[in-house]
Image (cartoon, rainbow, N blue to C red; front, side):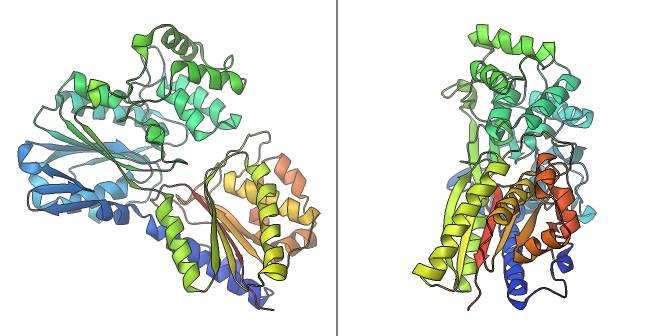
Length: 475
């Protein structure tokens, strides 16, 4: 099983109905994770027929290229690279090298390492020196390539941190400071990446620009989205796509979260220079540097949601996909979700009288860090949900699971957590002060005590988060 602590969720005093709900919910989660495994997404999008590389509806004649290089980075790119190599097996002589930056700690099946592509381990969400070295090697590959070469860039969420290449005058330490400030501010991932793009010579279309200014090789980018709305310029900060944001927006974001005067002087200078000189702006749509660039979105959380819906409907659940754009503060959304659950529970009991109802939601929440605890966005949301339920108890039997499908969230080792009626009884019996845990951003501390944190370790996936809500007991 993907869930390593599965047995923890079935204590001896758990009621039969709650046991059934937990089993269904956790099974639904595992199926959803499997649906967005990079290997599955790659094979769905790519096909090899003779000398033809077919990506979605486009055909590339491999005989037109002298060499193939594979570069990129993100939480899912190791599996993407292994699958791509396997698909290109009959054309392996074309692959002349490459490098991808992947998360430190990601477990790799050594039998799948061919040696043609270097696997470079770097840190996330704060970039490190190893990530910088790997990104520089990618740029060297770009500079050494020829017009007759094909460069395949593998991109997934996490690439913004895993692919650092600061502009001249900005140090890696400067990037680390500004990343830390942004992550603690409560800014959305789109806002964070808007700033990152304007401090980078790789992101914000600058990889495509570098390629155009050197070899003009063909660039084929395969992208798995972890961004709400699947905006390509925000996924891994869009190294191969036009940047739809500006220096002005980057500065406004820093002002909005009151950190403009806290960032390193070097980064502030770069942003102000860009504000006053249009020529320093990242490449925009219709820029010639994208003429020979082909970007493909090959996967998103949509596949996970569809798998969850299909599975639950097979069990005769009435499923409502209530949102694919969940955003905002985690602690605020906890109460919003409670109100939705409350409405659906009343509907189940008194209006529709259906015995099985499920809610599915996807997106990505944010956390403004005020305390010094351990947690993540889904765990904080669920803690807030518990607090709302405790203050206004009425629910009978339910289960809620919220998880980051890549396996790790925030500064915890958990992907998320599970809460239900049993969880609430445990909060009471252990006399736990939910508000104190919430104020300290210590959601993981709470869920460790309740034995309801979900542990998988890195899954190799990287899409948006998934929320599953079930009510299913017959009365």
